[in-house]
Length: 290
Image (cartoon, rainbow, N blue to C red):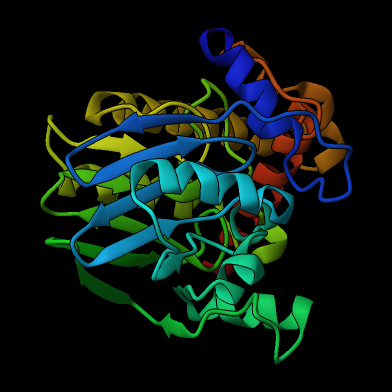
């Protein structure tokens, strides 16, 4: 994570901390195609599509940043986004839903995102998607076919990966942490390590060497970068399985520190011990299903 340590400190240091004192955020916009940009800020990476039909975005970070995010969008094209797509339900990706909805945006997300946001915010909340889908959905807008594809039980139970056909870009949400680190597998929200690995493998099969890959956190990369992440996940799974077979209980596995050989850096909110515990729970739950 050394090469991305500054970015990582921004995006991960604030993860889920909706009541934190907010320092000034250094926004950065990167152009990926004529109509598509990515906005780095504080929270999940935002994809911005602009063009003759208007504007739409993928994810919207935290509520307190909505005005600043709107200013960044207006630098590219004036106007409110017609749509906001949520890659999953976590607050650093959906925190701005209400603010954007009140400005006229229509939120789109998987059915499970709708259900989780309804549980948290209530039936009539503007945080909720007004369009939800089960397996997939295609948005034909700005001369682009944006294909939203649901991967079950990956980072959460409501993950959507967005494939942009014309721009040859994919936005993976938090299925992909591009920080030379392991991801947060939200087991309590239906996530699983096997599901993350499957989603990464399936995405690799659908993209080519020219595809630009937007992660949930970290810099944009390519197919090679995503393949490297897949290998990291597979190595971590093998180390965990070996330790579980030898030590059985969670306490013994934690003491064994199976992920230590990977020599990764970890953030304060997601230390190695927490990653180990979540991977352990995920693999044990999967084993009990067979």
